Amino acid sequence: MTAVPRSKTTSIPRPAGVKAADEGRSRLGDFTRPIPVDKRISRRPRVAAFMGIFALGIVGAIAFAVFVLPIPTWQDQSVDIDQRQAQLDELQRVNAELEAETNRLETADGIREAAREDFGYVEMGEERSSILPLPDLPTDLPDGWPYNVVTEIIEARGAG
Image (cartoon, rainbow, N blue to C red; front, side, top):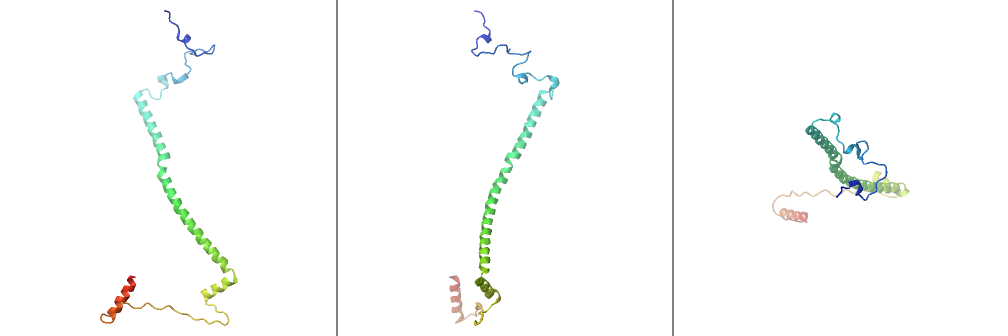
């Protein structure tokens, strides 16, 4: 049996005039050819492997610093945003109340009411009277009858 060249057994049609190798170079170019010794970064394979691992470690550290380290900060920011939103809502509520108070005080009735409260303004025909709140009663009563009964009553009312 005669040996048939491998190029004749394939069913893939090849373009005419294109050789498998062009002047000793493959179609993949420099990917399959070894690098000449004089053009290598290091002539010793162990040093080259160590440099490759070191470069890979640096790339890994940079990727860790860029993608992993910011995650806790990002999570803290979402908590801070929620807190700031609650503060903003409260400030907007207070601002709305102050604006309503300002609008009320711009009317004649609002001015009159503010003058009564702040300055004690009294209109013609009205009398002004100030009523002070009652002072707190003393709770340090002496021992003995009838004070011990009063002390028990005060303690019972204070307890609810």
